[in-house]
Image (cartoon, rainbow, N blue to C red; front, side):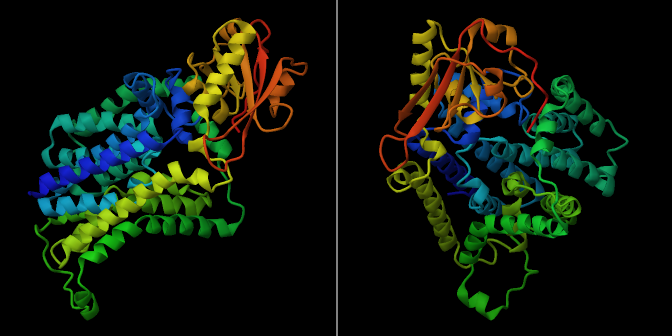
Length: 506
């Protein structure tokens, strides 16, 4: 079998497994998926926490699957599959052989971000094909100068902006490369970078306008949730913690790479690391690979060190789409390997372990875990129950639900009428809400737990609320999870508090 066919077979089977397993075993989608579906219910140019691309794609999958949530898992599988394809294209463009390209994909696939987090389709996962695609298009633009690659690069960068603003890190890395190196500077006097910029602005324009109209809601939300440095220790600890976590996320890659070498070779320490690979790379290819592998990570570490801010570990997801290529290039894989079959067997074992963990989380956790789990939350049962309560009380379909994001988002996703999520009964956090329409159709206020009312400002809006209800239901169909306690207040049409919300993003 040729290396290209082996790569296609491996990635195809792997993506299929990561899509099928959660589709068949997860009782309820993970947190980010449920939230994304709730946002996508109301098509907007942006949402409270993130730009809209994830929500748009989830809503599309909802309709393509006939109203089911499992489309999210296939979107994740498609994301990593497209990411693998771009990694293959980058390898070929840089001068790697097909064998090297195959092993670059295999080694990338056993890094943590391409395994256990995959079923939770969120902006981090969606960034994988976007970052890999942007790197490839920039490389093609440099090598060919063709206008179409500059245009596509700008458009894909805009898609990245619609996905997560973290893409600015890659945009800046590309721009800095074009300024520092001659092969990039030579295009500054041509139309390429400028049509790339115009392409970006044309596509991203509507979202920029939305940001202006909402007073930069997503930025203010992020600032409101950020943790400022508490002391000088944070300037050292936070970047070090992020870096160590990223090394740990590469444990699978290191293990597979090690398995390919013979013990005798390692013990003798006589490897000549200047030995040629299957195909020699040019100095330009080496420089390009090192730049886009290391500069984004270096900027994140520097920013964390200077500000003392904590960068979430999962934010590193797109930073390492070139890790497999780096390992192949600088560990001389597979040229210096003596046991490639053993390395591939190790790869299969690692993937089996991660898939087994996903299966265990979905099927076995309820047998022993006593803390409620997101993927076992009875989202569909709660949504159908609350919809019935509303219809019996008002004689109308449930149109709006207010409260915390998790409780309301599950109802928005699973209820037959798909009500809109009125997040925390706050129009600042829910700019898609039309208060006049809420007044016409009423709203159901929801919360979980044994407390007597919803926390915060919602209760202040309804000091004399009547029609409260509480219901206890099994958290899962079997196992040891404690029961779920649901609470609600029915606010019928014409009784909704429509005072202007105080601005807040915390």
